[in-house]
Image (cartoon, rainbow, N blue to C red; front, side, top):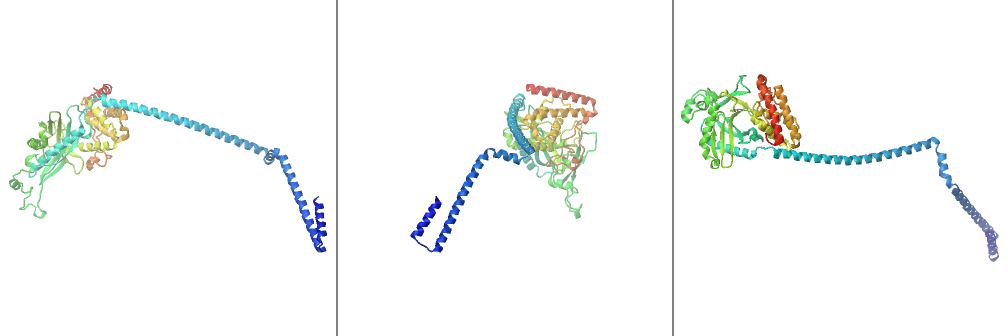
Length: 497
């Protein structure tokens, strides 16, 4: 159809517009080329249609045939095994997630139950310690502050009175003993102990001499007093006033005797004379103190300490003043404390009370706020009825436990456990007849506690040495331990012994 149309148009053009023969040939060639291009376009369209139909016919089986042709049989099985393995891993992960969720919930429930049990136990123990047990009701801190204020006022007055004499110089008092450590075993009047250090007056020297008598317990010293030579080196012994070379001249000039004439026996400082001298000064100066307007003072008899009792209309308390000489710059003193009925008046036993008090204060800073170590010591000392072993032995055991057991385990909820440990340590020590001193030879004390080199290197003495020497005393001590356990059980069960 299209061919006839082209020929018709060609003839019309020739008839209407006659052209040269060359132009006519060119026009014929152009038309033939256009016609050929149209035929090629028609064939291309027809071929595309056939390809589309072929694709539609093979689409149903194309993927299956492709896989069969691409994969070998062993590869198909490997692919299937991989799918099974992935499914297994997914199921295991899912199961573990569920188990972890369940165990987490169970753990939370268990922790909640334990917290409830701890709260119940803490309440029961608080009820036992605060309500069932009858503790001494005195406020120790108030009593300590009141005692230190009293002694400081005494010392201020006495220093002023002794400023132009040759009596020992009174240094600042140091609180020692159970009350200043934070515990007490007494249900009655608490005895507050203080140590007043003595230093030599002008023109005098103190020399400490170790007592070599091995029959006496502990470490004992004597204080030898010497007059000091104050002459210039090149004029020694010449006509210059000196305590050592001209004591009589100085005595006449000052109208004051030297220390050798007053408080010494055979050139050694005498404990009994020193105590009597201090008590006399206290009685004479009492009215100068502001405390005299609200308290009544009574001096109690004692040979190696100055014991005071103060009372008013509402309460009373006692103060025990001990005297000592510091060893070097350490926390160890030789003191006037009592050590048996046969202790000579010129003997000054070595005292570790200041070091022990500093240790308890150190532990109080480190221990938890609800620490029970003082309650433990106080309860043991309170129920100790028989004196076959001393309260100091119980204190030594508690100090050793404080030094070895982590401070976190001294919380209130561990009270019964620590009490049991203390009793067990006491039993073992009594059976072995051996309990080492805590301070002497202890090289692991806190740095703030200073010991002289010989005390630091010394072998710790056995506090139960007497039990090892006396079988009867050992049997009585073991019976006292059993009595202590029974009284302690009654105290925990009924609140009293």
